[in-house]
Amino acid sequence: MPATAHDSAAPASAPFAHAAVPDAWLAQSGLRRTRATRAVLQLFVADATRSVTHAELETELVAQGMVVNRVTLYRLLDRLVATGLLSRHADDVARTWRYALASRVSAGPQARKGEVVPRFECDACHRQFHLAEASPPTQAVAEQLLQTLASLGHHGQRVDMSIHGTCNVCVDPPEGNPETAA
Image (cartoon, rainbow, N blue to C red; front, side):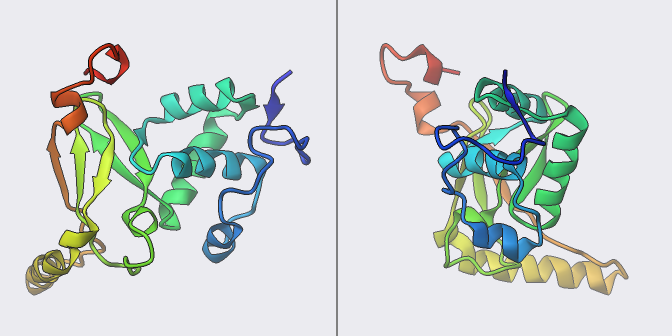
């Protein structure tokens, strides 16, 4: 029988028993360190380029033996976005939200809180690549945009910069690997 998000203790052999997700992230964000929270974060930490929908994430959790109520998963994703551990962006084609490890988390220690880290998203496979080295010039543009909004009486909360296109793997997929072809 699959584990549920409410199970208090995981056996040592469970896929999420190891604490690969830094507990410090959860402690700093004020989130409880539940099995569901760790399991969700672990999936994102395992591949920092991933960008998934709620349904895709739910399917992956079930495949790993973790059953999480659909509403609970929505609320957990919302909390992870609110604390800045995940980012959420619209998938205009599928008309749904996609979730990814936040730029400041996946870009590493060089990214400061509130710093704009532009990202490239492949429209074919939805992998994301954070462009931390492009961040300093981006900061000036972000500040200018926020100042322009303020001069118009608006209050900008954050700036998200993304470039959409097709990654090199989807443009030229390795031969014999149909999973990487879009």
